[in-house]
Image (cartoon, rainbow, N blue to C red):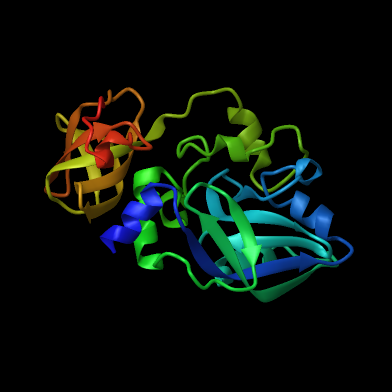
Length: 257
């Protein structure tokens, strides 16, 4: 597993995620345009898309691929979750959702493509750690948060017209939200929970993971708390680092964070 992780961190190999959703039908474009955060008129290749609730919080996320019959959606979480999210909003729309036995290939160098087979991929057990180290979002880490808070504002196309959550996004355009994602370096192991600085709640732990580079994690912390601060929570103690983590964390070089 460690060799596979080293390969991925060098930008070699790919991860193969099974199961894609084909959205097709006469209303496929208008339906999807009214659901996701991306403007389909600008879509030229694969791209991430968020599906928000009416409070502007992330419910689902996927990679969107153009398709001759409509659009292919590769979920960042479970296929059934993405399908349920879309089906909830189908009323009179003439659209069909079809699950296809295809694979989303996420290359360690950042490229994404669709394939009929997934042989030769890196072990999927390695992906959560690779994602943590490289800043690749996992749905479990971003669900329920505003795109701005988790560094995914680039997946929101302003001016595209109405979509679920668009009103909140319009109200917050150009404004700084209270929280941001930070890396956590474990000084004393604890459990997932709230984070405190000098007795004041300043955020929460989204994920903790033991790695070959020590105990690392992901936190959502108030913006006024500076990097380098030591916070506590869940019985543990953590130093706040820049996120995504700097390469020096795993390359053997000293990090400047």
